[in-house]
Length: 261
Length: 320
Image (cartoon, rainbow over all chains, first blue to last red; front, side):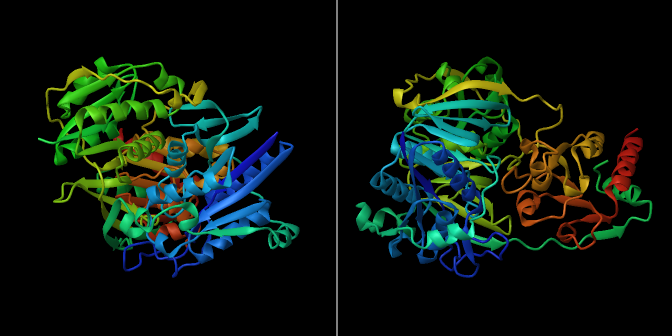
C-alpha cells in the first residue's frame, strides 16, 4: 500500500525563554530562540512508525513560518521524514489560526495526501484547534487527540483518552490525525539522520504558489485582534520555612489563617 | 435583546459546572439560549433555566454518540442558523474547542479559545486570556462574524438568575460527511469520587518527589482531608505513577483553584503553565532552590513524607 503522509509542524519560540509580544501585539519571534514545537515531535514520530508499517510511504513535513522555520523542518527531516515544504511569505506575518489553517489546507492539497498528522497543540499559541479545522476544511474525517494510532487496510484507528471515557476510533483514509504526548517518546535524530537531512529536498512556496491573496491572511486578514497584552506581575515572595519537625503543623496554621481549613 | 448561544456540556443531562459559568458570562452580553444535544434534556432544562437560559434548544440523535465531533457541529450550526446569535460560547474542553473551531469555519467567524473572562464591549465581547505560560494577560476580540469563544472553567461565578428556559426541539440533519469517524467503543473512566480537577476549589498535586505510584496515597490522603482534587506533574505521569487525566501543566490540564498545593514538584515551566494563576500557592519540596518557591505564598523546605502526613493529620483534627 502506498501512503502519502503530510506532517504539519510549527516553529515556536522556546517555552523556557522569556517570551514576549512585539509592538504590533503579535508573538515576538526574534527575542527568543525558536525550535520545532515539542508536541510536533510526537507527530513526526508517529508518522515514521506508521510509514514503517507500509510498503511504500512518503512523509512530507510542512510548515508555515518565517525564514528560521526551516530549522523545524531540518529537525523533522533528520528524524527521518523524506521531504519538506516551507510556506514563507512576508504577507503571512500576524496570521491567526484560521488563516494558518487556510494556508496549510492549500499546501496539503497541493502536496497530495492520504494521511495528515499533527501534534495536539502548539507550545506557543496552545489553542489545539488546528487539526479539527484542517479536517473541516479538507472535508475528511477528524481522528484527533490520539494516544495510540495505527494505519491498516486503508483505515486509521486510534484511542482517544477523554476526561470521562476512553474511545476507540476508526476512519477511512484520507483523514486528519492528531497525536498527544502520550503517544510515545519521539526519537532523537541520529548523526546519520542529521547528515542525510542536509541532502533532502526542501521546497519553498509563497502565497502565489497556493493561489492565495495577501488579504486572506496576515494581521489585516485575521478574524481576531489582540487589543492589549500586559505582563503578569510577578507573584510577591511568600514565606518559606525550613521543616524542623513542625513543617506540616506550620502549614496547617497558614491554611487555617487563610480560611482553607 | 440579542441572543447568545451557550453549548451545554453535560453527562446524560447532568449539567457540568463550566456550562453554568458560561450562562453567567452570556448574560453580560445578551440573553442566553442553551443548546442541549443528546439524552437528558428533561433533567438539564430546569437547571439551565434556573441559571438564566431563556430557551433550551434540544436535539437527540444516535449520531452524537456514534461519531466523533462532526455531528455535534452540524447541530450547533442548526442552532446558529435558527437563532442568529451575537456570540457562541462553548466550554474549553478538548471536544468543546474542536466543536467551536469547526463551527467558526462554517459560519465564517473568528474564534478565541481559553478565555478566562468575558465582558461586553462597544465592538463586541472582549475576552481575557492568559498566555505564554501565564506570563501575560491579553484582551482580544473577534473582528469577523458572530464571535465564537471557548471559556475555561472557573472564569466566572455560578449565579442563579431564573428565566423561562422553555425546551424547543431543534431539527438537525446529520450530514453523511459528518459520519467519517466512527466511535467503535467507549470505556467510561471510573470516578475517583473526588472533585473534577479543573473545577476544584483546592488541588493537591504530587511530582517527581513522590517517588513511586505506591506513594501517591499520601497525596490523595491530603486531598481527601481538604475535599480537594488530585493533580500530578508531567514527571510523575510520564513515570507511570498517576493517570494522564490528572496531569497539571502545558500538555495536561490548566487549573486555577483558590488553593494549589504542590508536593515534590520542582516547578518547571511545563508545570507552571498549568497552575500559576491559582489564587494561593503552597509548596513542599526538599530542594530550597526549586523554582516552585518563587511562586508560593507559603513554602516548606522539607521531606514531603514527613510534612504531608503531618499536615493531613492536622487538617483532619482541626476539621474534627
